[in-house]
Structures are given as C-alpha cells and as structure tokens.
Length: 267
Image 1 (tube, rainbow, N blue to C red):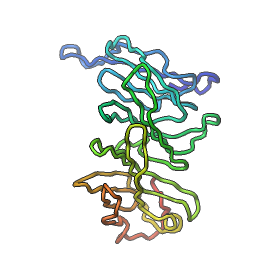
Image 2 (tube, rainbow, N blue to C red):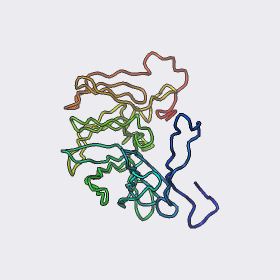
Image 3 (cartoon, helix red, strand yellow):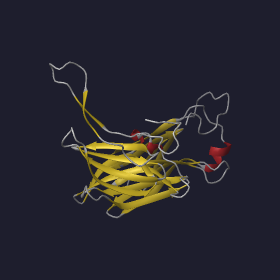
Image 4 (cartoon, rainbow, N blue to C red):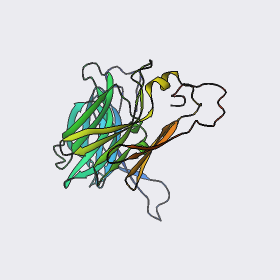
C-alpha cells in the first residue's frame, strides 16, 4: 500500500494468511493471520517465496533486507531472522548445494549511498539457520540488466550441474559495448562465477541494424546437454559444457520488413 502524500513513511507492507474454505464453508477465503509492517519506512516488497511453512521476503529502498518468516501457526506469522545487504533480489529460487539449503536471488546491485541501480546482482543466501541467514556468495555485473528479475520464465537453474542460465542485456547508445544474450554461471559454495556468454546479436548490428518490429522474450531449455536459447530476433543452440555454438537461426530472415525498427522494439 502506497501513500504518495506522506513524507516519512509512504508504504505499508504486510503479509496476510488466508484460509481456503472447506466444502461446507462457502467460497470466501477469510484472513486468519497477518504480520505487522514489513521492512523499514518507505521500503517496498520486491520478492516473496513460500517454501513449506516459511516465507522468504525481500524489501528495498536503498538496501535489501532479506527476511525469513515462520508460518507454522497461520494465526501468528513470526519473523525468524533477517539480513541487510546492498541492492535487492526481485526473484528468489530455492537450491541445495552439498546438502545445504540456499535461496538464489536475482536482482540489482545498488549504490547504498545514492540508491542508484548499477547492474545485475546474483546472491546465494544460506538459509540453513533461519535465525541468522547469510550471503554465502555474490556476483555483480555492472551496467547490465536481466529480465529474469521480473520474468521468472527467463530464469533457469540446473540442479545437477549447478549451472545458472540468465539473460543479459546492455545498451550503450553507441556502436560499441552493446550486448543481448545469455550468461551461463557456475554456482558452488562461496562462489558464483560466469562460465561463458551467448551473444544473440553483435554490438554494431544492434546499433546500426534494420530489425523486424517484434522482440522475443528470453527463454532457455536444455536437452541432451544442448542449451537452446531464444531471445530478441534469434534462436541459438550451444554446447552446455563448453559454450561452443552449434547453430544459429535468425527469426527475422525471410520476413517482409518494410520499415526498420530499433533492436529493442517491444522490449
């Protein structure tokens, strides 16, 4: 809830627990429990993930409080622990590494002083002790943007190989330094490291090229150790292990493009 006219506390964040009615109780869900205000003044809820009887919540204004709540008693949600770090996660995904439970977060890194968003941030939260969560590993890609933060279908994590596949976009308003594609990361205890990138268009063509006026959202899937990525104006197949390109198909080829559109049209 936002109160735009307020100066010191513009937001009210709460978590409500609703009861699904039994067969003879009608069709209305009733509130059986709620929390107090979540986060600090003026923070907004950026991500929520429910796993079993627990809720994992991220709020944000200039720093990222990461909260763990116990919902064992639906009438009295109870905060178990919290962690405050720069930036925020807008998507949370549960993973397990060497028997330890983690929450993998994708969002943005932020300057804690100015609040300015400076790039993609990947965080690995250790949630084995809910009273004291920690950030086990982090990786920041400055100047980049990933649609996986607000489109969970663009996110892919492979639990066997511990590989994270995320779309990445970067636009410099010049012919150099642009990027649109995917990054494959290796995730392990204490480390999140980029393994290789998959480029769906080169920087020069992104700035100067003539493109069809449609843009495919980022999607990926893996079959028989082959990674297929769909993004923007192309589909690419890559060897998952070493990053070698196997084939590339343009989605613009053969289309009657009577007017040139910019690369990120519809993005």
